[in-house]
Length: 374
Image (cartoon, rainbow, N blue to C red; front, side):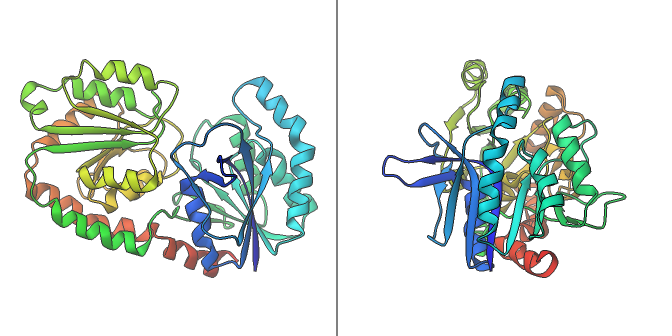
């Protein structure tokens, strides 16, 4: 069985001609080869140097089909997306002839016209993956249109979380991010964390104010000297438009705040292994960020915003902490709480991680694709 995936995932060509893409998506597709014989990924190909967060496909049975970059937040970029629509539709149409099933990953700029195209002009078997916040109250217009169209059609849609009045065609699905081998490794790493003198924290994601990076730095800066002396390192992994501003802000913290920039998957896992708590006080539109499950796997207790479906997996004071009102003061309060933890307090929360982590394995995801979707 052959699959076509259509997405806005960024891809780049390396100096030796190899195609690489954003590692969470590429890794997920690599593991889908356990379900499909051949996969075509129709996605954006950008100029420039690939970030360290990009990775290559694992097998030649995955074929990359390039689209010209389009989409964005400005009016000009949106008009450019409309201009590119005929080219995108032609590429998608030609690719569909080669496969048995398709998956369209939404929300995305091209989804505004691809969802109607599949709905009215294609009989090909397929499903949609909505990776954003399904329950977002005031989404951007494009997201709102796509969510409406997905609710009112016959094809299946996989979404983050379980919601009241959820349409019958919408299936609650976890986004996979871990192998069974990595889960076993996580159990081994936690054993080494059973004794510690100082505490390390980490954040992984876009370095933006909306994602909570500024709030993290300011909350740590506000700590008393007594609490600061209990902190080993604060790891910030990722990049963004506010990167230089955050570096300057961190100089006044009196703490060892490490800016890693983009890292490979293996390097990110090494950060998790060193850390005890994972921070994400975001106000951005989220589904369920994979990094939360990844961090939990390696014994990082999450201190995260209670938005979208996050609170359906993170139970406050049981396997993590939910920041119900995202302020610097509340983040500081949670940091103080965990800095006063005993090893026993830490381990009580870590041991409860297993029920969450097991749902985010590629094996679990592939089984559900086979049994519930195709």
